[in-house]
Length: 474
Image (cartoon, rainbow, N blue to C red; front, side, top):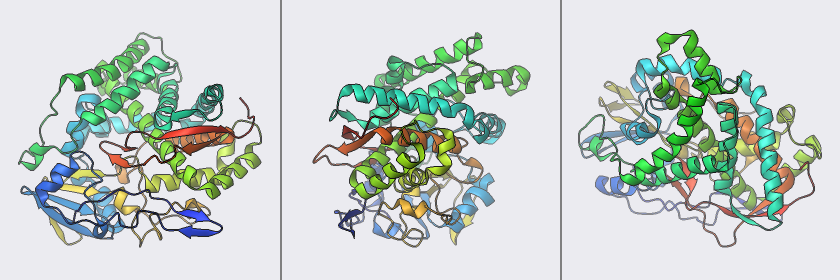
């Protein structure tokens, strides 16, 4: 089932009206590895274990050191897991829980059972799509500030766009979640802290494969503790300010605080508030930053798509900054974001732990088995998306949509990301605002290599040069 995968530059290239296959035509070749080899390989990169035969609609199973792993790559059976039998598969994998519990505590992303049932409605209400109009101006104004900074760097300046997008989305989420400016120093603490945290976390919990159903706690090394402290120091201060009455009345955290005052039985003490604030912050800024980074990479390799994007922005917005009212008309911009999410889902592996024995698509499932739904595979399955490894935003133009449970960049079922609409609008507005003013070009001869530990990032970042299009609303 698994094998070595040399990761490709997964785009299509077009020249004089012709479309070419990606350069890495042999990236699915490689000899299958033994289970123990797979575990060792996956520890550094969870994408490195897949081979060509995994990109098919099917349910498959292997055992690693006696532990069953079931991979579900069929929309019909994904629906069964995440919706019909959500009660049996609601729990995140031991690896994900253990990897994030030190950082997020019992935050919504990794909680389950009563904690999840109690807090999910609270967080969903706070980031509900009906609240997006209140936060959209923050998205636009913060993007405009980045435009101004990029202009000041001069034409041709080089930046690492992964960190630029992380800074942008961290500031947006801070102003909307926390109601105040994060500031460059605090933003850097969070961005660098989480980057270091990801690099230090083992992508495989060996204790789980050795027989411990809940896995082993992460070894809290001095470097890992320092990374978490840098992040918690920023978020703790903001939460404490809110509890002291200094928070913005429209911020997401202030809404949580007020809800706790009205309903003390919720038990949202300082630690719980910090955990939910940290969850919203980390999930909100990291996923959108990753999406925007990959979008810039794809656009830099697909000038015909970039031309269509620029023409649309010029027609819809002119020289005015894009706003929420423009979003319904920015169809190319939306389709670019959706196609980027298809090719590079921020969380490319959604893993659950079976509560009880079951059967999925004819495969018998053990209690405590690892059940994996892998958007990285699903979104690149030929029967679901023709030419699946090509960058083709036109897939998402018009009224036709992917079949249910075939496109799940925000997960699916009851555990669908509650910030879905917030993230989509944010990505569209940020991309439109920056593309209105700049073209980004990948550093010549730079090898782009996807790497998945907790989220999907380009290994070593994405160095680009900035090129001014025209004088926009700076």
